[in-house]
Image 1 (cartoon, rainbow, N blue to C red):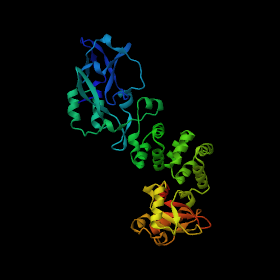
Image 2 (image 1 turned 135 degrees about the vertical axis):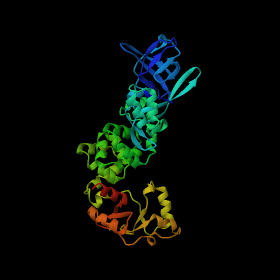
Image 3 (image 1 turned 90 degrees about the vertical axis):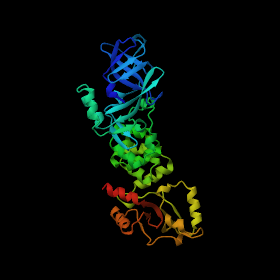
Image 4 (image 1 turned 30 degrees about the vertical axis):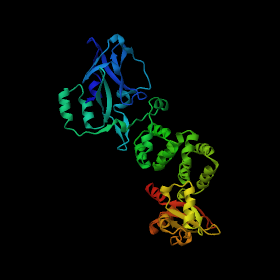
Length: 412
């Protein structure tokens, strides 16, 4: 196996055995082949550098490349933003290990030789993020290759297969040219994605959010520290920010907007659909540390006289986040809060069982101006998963979920 450090700084010779230049860079063309070394940059001192294509390579060994063409057949180098440069874009740069779900720094790049009709193609197989790559880099040109190989065999290896590497490119135009996508990030758990983003610079975080779909971006931002979330959203275009906030729970969106500058918050609210904007504005009226400031206005409530089958059928037709649905709230004929039913009870109820017969005891709720300490005490005392918030007339206007409580306590 070869490594990028074995070749960079080495020498290239043409088909006649004449020295052509020093190997100063290795390029990948992601739009063509995502892991093939497509071009080799050959520096020639005061002369213009040359480019050798992958099909010009006849032989490769540490420190040397031999070509199957003469020097006169090589083209002069012209920069191309669609090429991924190993030395410039990868070595010593941060990347995302989508398998290990963390940010790591590249110390070296492992290359495999693939022989194709008289040529040798170099393929990137994995990136070295451990001590072996660091040692090769540190000792390159200082110690003999044999000594370096002997040393690195004794060190622990940490490598990431190339297919699990996600590059970070803040420039949106170059990101498109390099065909960098974040599909693998979108499949991660939002909490893991948030941990990754916290290890990145502001520009890198912005790059990730800008290229994610709105739903994934919203889920990741909801897991981030509130200060970072506000910083990210404030730098987005108002329409993009609004699209992401629409995917958040209203209480989370309100928390973000409350921390934004007045001008930016007005711009974002103008871009949000009327109903979502109205819900957020209503929540902004409440103190952040009150029950009203913690509640989510997206909650399920049904008439207490409804049967189990009627409720299940209705929920199936609704746009409900099933992963967070654990409680159905009840109202009486006067639209007043009358109880709560755990979804687990619905599973074992008979089809014609009335909801009022399934409700939990005691009947618990809080007013929107109740302070967070009272909310925490109720969740702790009764081991609640959710708690209804009712207005002065006893009508449910929102619900506080246990994850809202945990988040508030964690950030206190």
